[in-house]
Image (cartoon, rainbow, N blue to C red; front, side):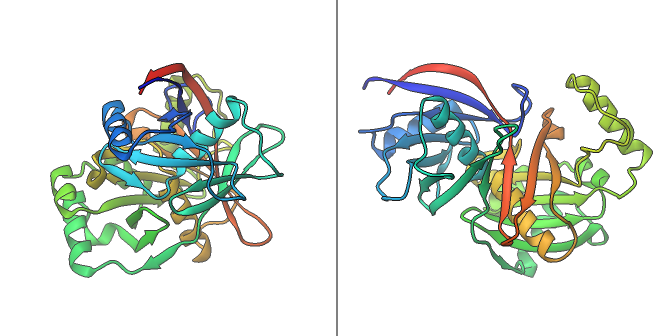
Length: 306
């Protein structure tokens, strides 16, 4: 065991404690899988990452991503948070983009010149219609009626999300799922709803309350208002509700943009039911690549004994 540099980063928020926290061990050399899993279970965050020298010649660094329940091949907020921590620790990319190596392969990241906000290129997405029996069980666990479901899709970009597009933001925010039932089904579930083009008075009032609570100035209606409200339940990984979920947001963007339900660029909101204020920036470049971005802020900087 030795002292290793460590950061805890808040992702998808520029304000500490309003996004999704990530623990980052900046030097995981010499640690075996059991030690990585043990520390991830101890942090009890949705994800903990461990940085290593790359083994791929094109990569700038390598990351391994662990939940309290196991390792993930890819995840969104750990990608942004790990890159933020790596850059703060003096990491220098070899080219114009930052190349992260993870179990799913190489992920490209870029920095917005004006804000220094990071964004990752959404990995290739596999889509399929969910099994009808499983979907019915998930809807029962969520407490969702058939008439509240607009569309469904299974989204796979490393993590696999059974995803439901619901009829309203109010429906999404009001759900109180049966987490034991979801855990028994061993499936991660994402739910989302589109904001109306003209926000309803209850949504405007909610936006203003959140702006005041989180110390932000916000016009009504706001030019930076979200277009999508999202929640993610990952009981199979030991996470009842994830504050802000990059992999789910990436899959949703690719699905909903392709079907013409959303146009990029747009903002997505996540975490309100947990007292968070996560904002995810979605863009689509001329080549059709979807980019998933968010602010990051370091909250803890020090060393861990591992």
